[in-house]
Image (cartoon, rainbow, N blue to C red; front, top):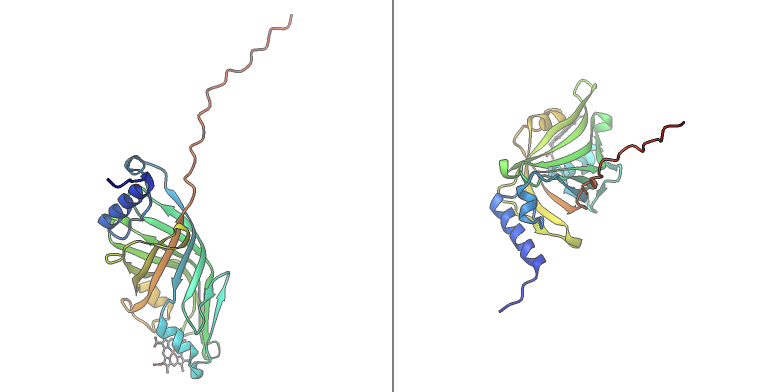
Length: 236
Ligand code: HEM
């Protein structure tokens, strides 16, 4: 009879549960009891979001005629060869009852072209998944766009990309990380507006890859017994 250790069994159960619930669920090795009770959310740490935003836009800015420039800011990086961006230091939460996730990343990207006519700056990138409620998610961001009349519009925390989690299954990455690879993404209305209307809502964006690790579970503060105030002996 094969020997079974507790941890693989838990992991297997969690992966099965995650698959059954759809991609919004994370493959966290949670004891069933933790998921059944109203447990506090589990912290997510060391997250990264690998996302090129839109490959054709990156290529457009790399064409000589556009005189484009793409600058990563605030800790974000760009892969060689005008590749995808990585937004870093992601922290967030995993909701153990609804299996939704929310992760906020550091870093941004600044696109410039046409001698300053095109100017789009993206920062405060966040990714949310709805969990068992729906096989959906979204990427939100703060976006500052130079409009056609030359004025700048700031859109804070706008829904930029709509995510389809239906075909995405959690996988395992290095160091126990959970990886949601190649999540299909489409531009939203606000996202289209952030590109000054040069794209339309529903246009395909690059697929996004989310990597997160489970942080230390929040500790419940010890319950201290009520202390009786010391009685001062009456002074005589
Ligand atoms: C001097 C002003 C501009 C000129 C001459 C210009 C020219 C062009 C040309 C020729 C294309 C087609 C490129 C191709 O098919 O490879 C294009 C595409 C595009 N332009 Fe501009 N453009 C200007 C300003 C802007 C501005 C201000 C924005 C946004 C804020 C913008 C956003 C776009 C986008 C999103 C595309 C589609 C890129 C793609 O995904 O293929 N452009 N532009």
